[in-house]
Length: 380
Image (tube, rainbow, N blue to C red):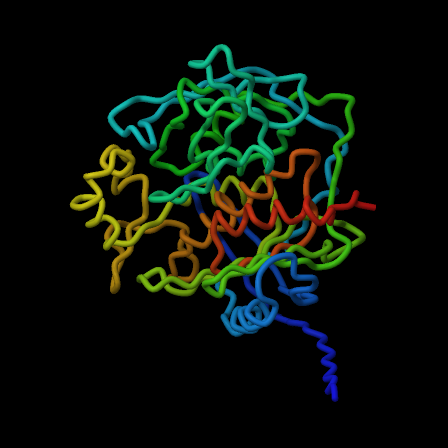
């Protein structure tokens, strides 16, 4: 005898409030007056992970308050034609995995479509296209996205803080030349790269931009209550890329949640968000971790990483809104999550992203599942 139980769920979340925000970053001033109205259709089709666990995490996320809602920011229509850089520019910094070394990158225009990483120290190797098919690993001791193409030596580690800018900064095609597989670290997060892109300028081509989306919500879930969901654009009349991202750390970072549309203005603002770590991991790196070369030679300092203990921040946090530091969730949303979205090589994704407690591994799993299940479709 079979018992059939049917569940029909219509999950919707409505968050409404009115906020007047004045934010000052450097010499730039942003003012937004907004009335937030965030809707979601739930987790939809599960591509990977346990559906019940993802549903439970979804409900848990909806109970977490939004710290900063920018969803009512008005945006222009999507760009139509592809761009590249008008000229080249170079920047340098200490190495990520070889902190005592100075590493340089050169941003160059290209006639190729997409973003490419070119190891100048490996003249016999082809450039690595930024795409999910070239993801080698998401790191072991240090969580990061590693891209590789061809021979095992032709790789670049910690690419996320570079490639995240493929989304939202108005540069569709570019070559990043590196002098090693170890990109530079900057005290201002990715702001140095943003400013280099400004110096390069933009050159529009006659090739149209390809925009992609999903026909219905799709999700992947991990083993720690983490999930990422992609859904169609919230506003079909003016489709944009929007993000609802929440984190929940055991350190002083705690719970943080932001909702925002991806645009150059907010990308520029959030680019100063640094990688974060716990005080416990710092102690590990200073003791047992010194046995491992990848840890012993790390270029992280109190200037280029946010350190959080149980009861306080060890160094000064950034991106404070209404008295609460939101640097960690901005870093997760822009410098990490959008790096995964940049791994869609044949177009720009447009739609709504919901992310809860996720990281590089789950982000890349979502990108793989999109192609394995042939979910992506051209934006109408």
